[in-house]
Image 1 (cartoon, one colour):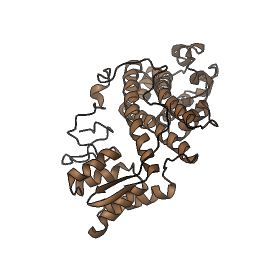
Image 2 (image 1 turned 135 degrees about the vertical axis):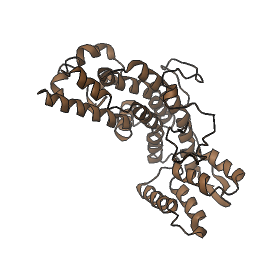
Image 3 (image 1 turned 120 degrees about the vertical axis):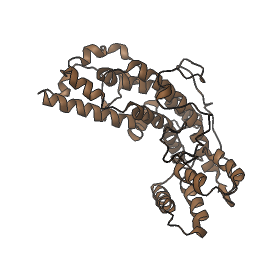
Image 4 (image 1 turned 120 degrees about the horizontal axis):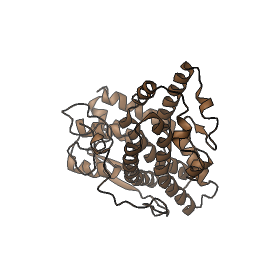
Length: 339
């Protein structure tokens, strides 16, 4: 079974909740993300033109201090952390919508290696753009005039683009195959105007402007790669398409991190995790999951992990599986944090 929120496979058939995001497996609130929906248009979303469409009102959000009781203990959330959680949940919903559109178009248009190399990045950037554009509007509404849309998009792609990692692995594989054929992929791309790479991803002016008309069709550009049909077939079938598509969901969702980091850096009341807090949360959870923490200290450790990383899905999944004291009381916290 696969989780309907994050798409990760169930670790054990006895698990009632996803270890990765905490969603109950029998919860039917979210559409499936596995191969069962790959060729269908999302039924729950009204198709809209991407241009000018936004889910987020580009206004300031001021966090509020909040107090909960969780696993029988008081849990305080600062106003700054509340703002971080707010943007995280907003972008989760919007990223999932864009991911569904990406996945639909990907399976419609990508049926061979050449289409993957050409159309994959175009589809990716097309559905990323509204998410990035909304973040930019939020910057403008908060008076952050020292960053351009182009700079923000480029930085986000450099920081959070796992799809690019997969894409680069494939371009490297093509390159090695061409070298074996006494030909280098660079020579095949000599005549392509206005294209650059971050890793493997197309990123420069032509893509940013969506001006694909100035570029030649993928058949004319890519059919000179000099791959034999068996080579092309073998390379294309190396791709785990489900995994590649789900990486897109995470990339889209991570726009909230790029947004929150900028707001945090500008002292605009948004919390952001530090490297030290990340390490502390990971170490604490590693010991917690190995049952190395004395029982009397488990509550304290759980709360410290949440304080360091309120978006740490593993700890919320662990609590649901192993430490769900007062489940009705805890449910308010699970819902608030987005788990």
